[in-house]
Length: 351
Image 1 (cartoon, rainbow, N blue to C red):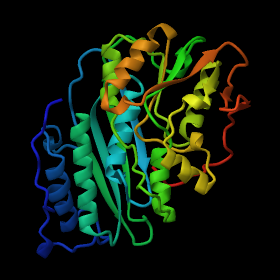
Image 2: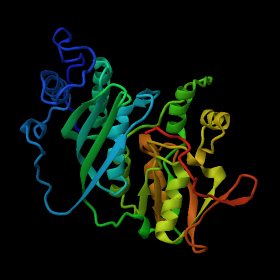
Image 3: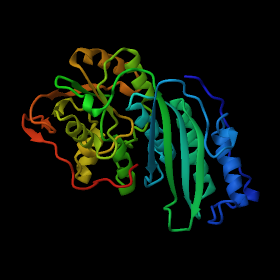
Image 4: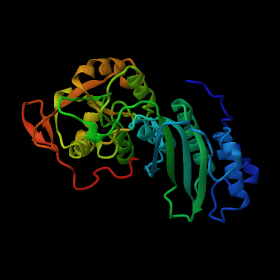
């Protein structure tokens, strides 16, 4: 991956000329211009952003494209292993990667609350730039709005992303077939527990850090190795369970999981028990689930484990011809149970 030049790490807006907190006045005022030109444009500088248009214009060549958007409202804004900035970039990059696309360009929209400290905003902007560089994407367009104090909870971020598909595979839930093996690239439930432990003030022997990371490099390795991928999914909100339930329903297949094969670190397990949560339903931000034919599973597992984001990869289940649309978990004690959808979101504001 090409290394991009580092940018200035001190806040680029002179404190003597600018309030250290945001004020909710018109979007065309001096402070908004300072934010756009002095902070965002400097942090995310690239040829497309420098066009200065309302939309970035670029060529993609012949072929298929992927397009996605997401909004991020995590509370608190920063947590062990990341913050709302890295979460926004990695989350959008990963959504593109799950379609098999190579992410290229992102947009970024900021909803800023009056009174937000400028240094807090600058820390988020720097984090986004680092995450974009790591993923090999550029933030090429965006928007900024300031809302009245008490109306925005500090900072919300919206991102959109585009990418190109450079292969002929049809990677989606309906492509899942009986006999496919289910692979995960590492331990589950880490992001949700990192946020919740901080929010609830839980203390453990070691801090639980989010797994927030870009997965496009790992997906690219799988594709380059010739693995026939039928489906990819990043198990974010609702965790591994929600993702597999959706895929089972969309594909009309039954998925059988082996609990003892699902990677779960002891510190995360302890945090889940302390909060009364099932780790299957806890969000991840650096994990993917891959469905591949059994004949390709060995190669897929090897390539995953050779990548920094897949060192703990495991085969955790199989797709079978049985009752369509179900997910069955075979527990460690040999009891099988249906993995059901939750009636509500058990962990709000974690992404």
